[in-house]
Amino acid sequence: MKPPRIRFAPSPEGKIAYQVVGDGPIDLLFHPGPQNLDAIWDNPSLERFLRRLASFSRLILHNRRGTGLSDPIPLGAAPTLEEWASDLDCVLDALGSERASLLCSDVGGIAASVVAATHPERVTALALLNCYATLRRADEYPWGFPEVAMDRFLEAFTSRYGTGGNVQVTAPELAHDERFREWFGRLERLSMSPTAAELFTKLILTCDIRGILPLVKAPTLVISHAGHPWIRSDHGAYLAEHIPNARYVERPGFWGLYWIHDVEWVLDEVETFFTGTKSAPNLDDRVLATVLFTDIVGSTERAAAMGDQRWRWLLDEHDIVMRREIERYRGRAVKSTGDGYLATFDGPARAIRCALAIKEAVNGLGVEVRTGLHTGEVELRGEDVGGIAVHIAARVMAEAGSSEVLVSGAVPPLVAGSGIEFTDRGVQPLKGVPGEWRLFSVVG
Image (cartoon, rainbow, N blue to C red; front, side, top):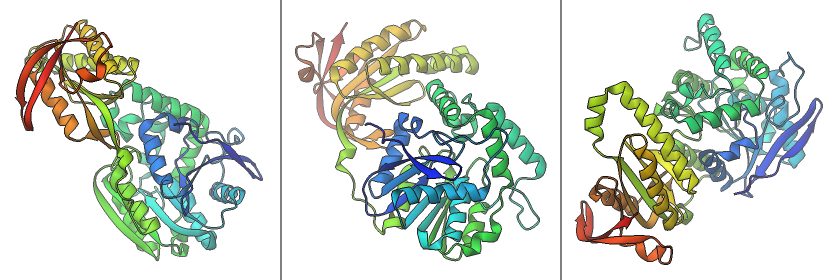
């Protein structure tokens, strides 16, 4: 889907880049961090998150001064907190928006809280996702960083900035995903220069808005996750305790990137908070797809024989091959299953050809895979997929032999005339799936 066009709001110090998506009944200003507004739409998970927000609002995104597509700031300078907050006002003025709800994560909550306190007539509601009043420790604020820890945080963040290395902290489960790491590093480079990143981080580490919290009059939702890598949930509890009309919710589990972690719950909660209702399930979340499952043959024995480190290296090479071939045949790599992969395709012929290409490519690594495919309706669950079609494809794969590409009976009629040939493997039950299923082995 085409990204929304970039617009520019005038401000006394330069132009502020912003985008508008959706035409819902409320104006919702979401601060996505410093990320370049063009580049954020390159990631399917991030795009899906933003479009869900736009499904119930007129969603407004912006780049604060000195970041992304907004005008730069003088080298060696950083905007003050007041100037940063005024960027939000400038964008709302350019749109003619008199009142808006504000949604922010992490550091974005600082400026949003200032706007809510200084312009209460303009803020309808405020949602703070893993935000804080300050990161600096004090006697009455013991969950902040001590001075030495702040220095270490700054050094670690800035040394990894632009390399993709910060994924190790914000999304450790994707740290070995070379493609994601490269995209994340590119997003950082397009969003701020290293010098600007260091200046903004220093600003973030010195901000303290504890004094203005009692002046925030808008209804406020504060959400914290117990497993955030550097923002303890005590920060959120403090915000909710000192903002007069706030409700606090603490969630279990890890949270580092808003478009990856605890996505569905967060989106449901903020939609209900801002609108009073939660959207009915979207029928567009169910689509026809060809599901492909692969599995390395004899993986347990291979892992035991190779040892953990060599086996990890082999899996890394295997994952690179899998993603390359899936992308080459215009599929979507849903996830690694440890020693295999799950992918979806909108064309069964391409899915089969991808499976054959994978079979040949992994042979070069000295491994063999079994592959199963089924075409049916799948349910989109964020970046994941579900539904009976996914279970069927997994069970078909379980019946495949070494280096065999096995498909359910639903697939051959859909590729008639493609030149793909099959051998009938007969009718057999699939574990956990009702009925009996005719299976076919791909020739080639």
